[in-house]
Image (tube, rainbow, N blue to C red; front, side, top):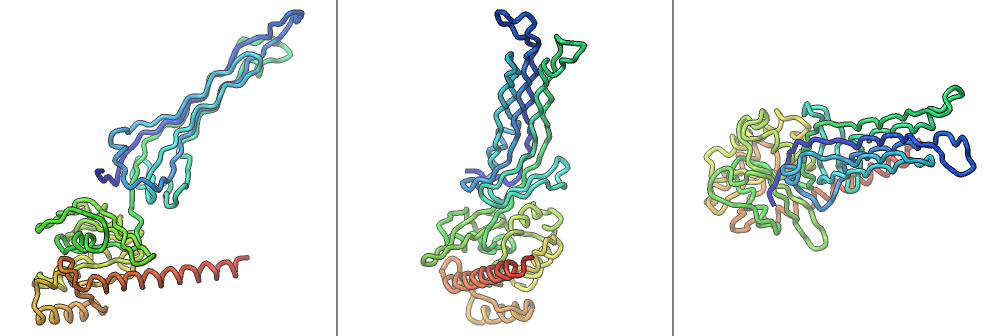
Length: 345
């Protein structure tokens, strides 16, 4: 299945049904009077979060979505049936924007969450509603009101426990393959990964979701190399795993390039928990590993893990570090929730 994280759709809610012009006609009822019913309301367009979706590719082939029209009113004061609602299912983490692509309407973050983005038109009034003391037999009924129609942008941002970041060809996809059942494309050239990938890391009964985004380049925060779309996928990740290619001459410069793009992008990406990882240790000797590890520790002020995604060296320890960080965050979140319940007025 192809991955698509942005789509434009046209949405129209249902028009209301027209009111009826009818008169009561029964034996022995000389002046039956009007009995036309109102038209039915048009169907709404509803956005719904579905857990089994992970791409917006369906909207590439079907961009125009319309809800059902309301039925017309009928005689004997019968109201027309309501039009069928249209439920548009989107992946968890989808944001709905207005046509200007800047005004966010709703952020769909929970499975089963629903939001009405276009309401159906009201039905027209039947001729019974127009009866007055001076007009006992009105031959007038109201038309149904039109439904709403608008263009929307859907933008999907992955929801994962941790996100893999780094320059192109830093070994992110190889690490994802080594730790999960995901099988992204791997190659010895930059930008082998051209769309985000998700994988589930298992350890006993515990699991975490890992997101691999395409490599970042200088200027990514301004859109270079589709950087803004890629960075958006790690906005919801509480932990970032920063992989650095150990075969590069200046590993500190590689680190600083990506960190600068995180700071320029904003959205508090630079404030997230970061695990710094020196990758491709299988291509380095002991002296090179020691030298580059010390340089990174001095530049970052953080502990640096040394791994080889290909050989598997250090991968298990890094996975354990990830689980420990996530467990600490979950405990802190539970304590915050308990505190809020205690002090809730």
